[in-house]
Amino acid sequence: MLASRHVDHANQAPVTLFPAEQCCLTIDRFSLAYAGKSALQELTLQVPRHRVTAFIGPSGCGKSTLLRAINRLHDLNESVSHSGDITLEGHNIHAADMKVTELRRRVGMVFQTPNPFPMSIYENVAFGLRLQKRLAKRQRDDVIEWALTSAALWDEVKDRLHRSAWQLSGGQQQRLVIARTLAVQPDVLLLDEPASALDPISTLKIEELIRNLKSQLTLVLVTHNMQQAARVSDYTAFLQQGELVEYGPTDHVFTNPRLQRTENYITGRMA
Amino acid sequence: MDITSDTHSTHISRQFNQELEELKTHLMAMGGMVEKQVQDAVFALLENDSRLAEKVRDNDRQVNDLQIQIDDECTRVLARRQPAASDLRLVLAVIRATSDLERIGDEASKIARNALTLSENSNTVRGLVEVRHISEHVRKMLRDSLTAFARFDTELAMQVIREDEFVDGEYGSAMRSLMTFMMEDSRSITSVLSVMWVLRALERVGDHANNLAEHVVYLVKGLDIRHTDPDTLDQQAAPKKS
Image 1: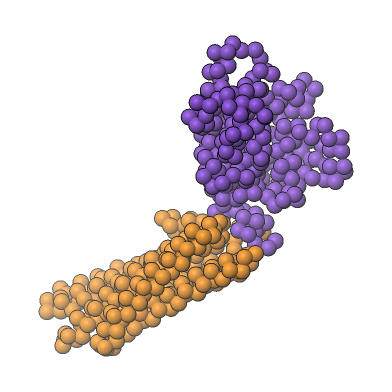
Image 2: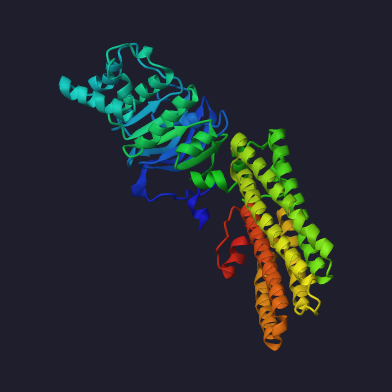
C-alpha cells in the first residue's frame, strides 16, 4: 500500500499522491533545458492545496529552476526551452490566455536575500496593490494592515510605517517581502531559501509564519536546510540531477525513505 | 528501504560514523553483560551456588550504569547530529533496547534473589526441571535477539518473536505443574512459590527478548510491529522486492 503513495522515478508512470480536487499545482512530465543542457527531466508531481511542500536536493539538482518555472521566471531567457505542463488550479500556466502578470499575482515568490524596494514600509506593501487596482486609502490601509499582520510584522512596524524599509533587520525585511506578496492575495507562495541568510531566531519566525500561512494559501519551499524541510513541510520532494527521486509525506521521507539515494542524501552519506 | 549492518559507517562525517558505531558496540557490551547475568542467575539457582547468586545481585548496578551511559550517548547524538532516517531509527532502537536490557538485568537479579531464598531451604526444591527447560529457550531467545541486532537480521528477529509464543505456552504448563506440587504437599508451598517467581522472571526475559527483536525490525525496515497480530507479522517483515 505504501508504494502507491510515492512517485518513484520521473520516468515511470506518474503515481497520483492526491486526488485531483486537492491539487493546487500539477507538474506533468515537465522538462527544462538551458541552452540545450538538460536541467529538469520529465518531472511529475502534484502540490496539494493548503499544505507546505518542500523541494530538497544538492546544489544544481534543479529545485530552484523548478520553482522559478512555476512563476515563469525563465520567460525572458531565450536559451531556456521546456516541455510538459504545469497547471495551476487546472489552468496551464503557459496557455495563451494566461497573462504572466496575473500568474505572478496568483503565485508570489520570495527569494533568499530580502529585497525590499527603496521606499517606506507602507509603500513596499502598497506597491503591488497599486499596480493591481485602485483602492480608496482606507481600504488600502486595511489591506496593508492585514498583510503585515499575516506576515507577523504588524506589531513591530505599526508605529513606523512611513520609515524606510531598509531600516528593518534582515528577518523583518524578509517578512516585509512576504507581506508585500500577500497583499495581492496570491493562491501560492514560492519560497526559495527564504531563511538561509537569516539568524536562527529570525529563521524560526519565518518558519512559524510559513506554518501559519498554510490556512490561507499553498506554499512551496526550496531549502538546503533539511532540518528546516523536516520542521515545516507536510510533503517533501527529493530532486537529484534534474530528476525527481522520491516524493512523499515528510514524516515518511525523514524516518524511512523508500530509496537508497534519498537515504544517502538526508543522512549525509557518500552516494 | 532495508538497511544493513554497514549502513551506519558510510557518512561523510567520520566522527558521526564513529559515534554511531560506539552506540552499537556499547549496546552489544550491555547485551553481553545482561546475557551473562541471566546465565549466572539460572546456574546459581540450579546448582545452589549462593555466592554466584550474590554476585549477580550486586552486578545489577553495573547494568543500570551502562543503561544511563548509553542513553546519554544517544541524547548527545540526537542533540548534536539531528539524525534522520536509518540513523534516527538506530538511535531510537538503541534507546528502546537499553530499556529492555535493563529490565532483563532486573529479572536476572530477581532470579538471583530467589536462588538465595531457595538455598536456605534444606528440602528438595521441586520445579527445577521446568526452570532448566524454560531458561534454555529464553536464553536462546536473548542470544538470538542480540545477534539479530548486531547483524541487522530481521529473519532471525522473526524467529525470536515466534519462539516467544512457544515460551509463553511452556510457561503456562510449567505453572500448572507447580500448582499440582503445591496441592500435593503444602510444606513445599514456600519453595514452589519462589520457583514460580523465577519462572515468571524467565518468561519476562523472553518478553523483553521479543521486544528487542521488534526493535531490530523497526531499525532495519522502519516498521513498528509492536502490538501487531503475530499472524500478520511474517508478511510485513518479509524482505522487500528490489
